[in-house]
Every structure is written in structure tokens, then in C-alpha cells.
Image 1 (spheres, rainbow, N blue to C red):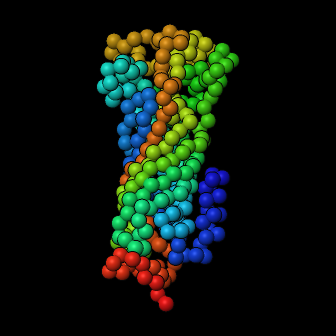
Image 2: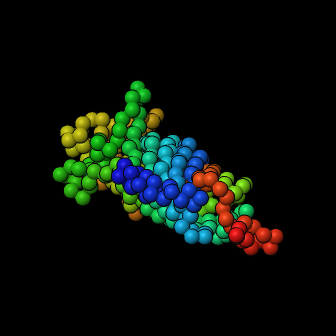
Image 3: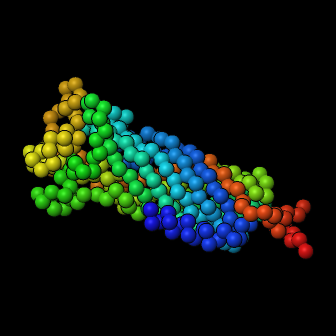
Length: 276
């Protein structure tokens, strides 16, 4: 939330220079890679961008999406489908980044571009019990996080930092309106986007400290026909050597704010011409 307020303050201070300010709209899909098989969900966002100098823009974006993963969809042959785990989560992100355009859109009508910056995101993974009741997973400490018996396992934070980067292509439909396609990746410093990372805790300890619901959502293989019993303490539950990622892809529409036209115009040779 603080980042979102900060972004608003920055772009409000730039609003007096409307010809350099753009309203941006994003619509597409979001997915993740982690310890389960992800499934794409809808995502969207709104933001502002400011032309710093030709080819370089400063942009701020607030986006929202829906993440999900399920062991039932995993066909890797590694046996992870036998855990029978699943999760869903909304994800809200505030991003600020620098965007570099290969060509100047005031001179050409098309350009590839790349971007990189910093972001803060909030998520809260949950699953559902056999009756369909939603159960949030972080408070359960499904791998023993936060228990004195497992001092190396800490409860993960639901709001964290990420590094967004990616690229896309833009097409100038007019002096004011640009459309394009963008793919953006998020480098995370977190392996609990899906509530799975390391090893199983002892089921007896987990039940006594966090309750039987924690045990039920730590391992759900026993819900399957012929499924195995809860694994022994220390058995591998996830892969902590590979952090989780999420990524967004979709359409981007930018509309230049302010009255008047860009002073730079295209000549027949492709070189900019300035009005007197």
C-alpha cells in the first residue's frame, strides 16, 4: 500500500506535463512456476507512464491476478501428484520500472521494448476442505513454520518484494493511442507462493501445535483411493533450491494525456520534424 501511495505522489507531481504522461491499461493472463502444476488465470492492471527522454519511460502499475496450482495436473512422473495438494491465491502488485523502447514512437509507428524495476506484491494462498470451505494455508504452518521444534522454518510473509522484468512490442495507432503485447516475469525471493517448499514436519507435533487441520492440509494423499499415509518427518515435500516465480502476459493500451499534439512529427524520411 505504501508503494502504491508513493507511485501516485510521483505521477501526480508530473501531471502538469500532460503531453509526456500516459494512462496505461493491461489485460491478460497470469501463471506461476513452483512446486505444483500452475494453471493460468485472468489478470489486469492500470498505471501511468512518463516520457523521461526519447526512448526511456518511467512507469508505475498496479495489477491484480488469480494464481492457482494443483498436483492433480502434474504429469512429470516425479510422484508429486501423490501429495494431492492444491492452492489458489489472488495477487496484488505495485510496480515501478524503467522502460526502454528500441525506437522512438514519435518517429516510428512500431517498436520492441524492455523493462525492469522493483515491485511489492501481496498474496494469501488457500485451499478448500472436503465440504468446500476455504482454508487459508499460511497460519497453519503446514511444514512446521514458526514452531520451536523447527527453528530454521519461519512463517512466510504475505507481502514481499519482487523484481519485475520483461518486454514486448508497441504499435502507435495515433499520436495519442498505443497498443501492444507484453510479457513480464517476476523474480521472487520466496518459495512459499504455493505454500510448499521444504520437508514434512512430524504429524504428531503439527497436530498438537497447530491442530488437525494443519496435518490435513500438509498432506492430502490419503484422500486419494489407495493413497499413502502421511510421510515421515523430514521427507521431501517441495524443492527449496528453486524459488517460485509468477509471470503475466497480455495486451497493453496506452493513451497520452493532455491536449495538443507531440511536437515531434514524422517526415517522409522517418526523421523528426519540429514545428516553429
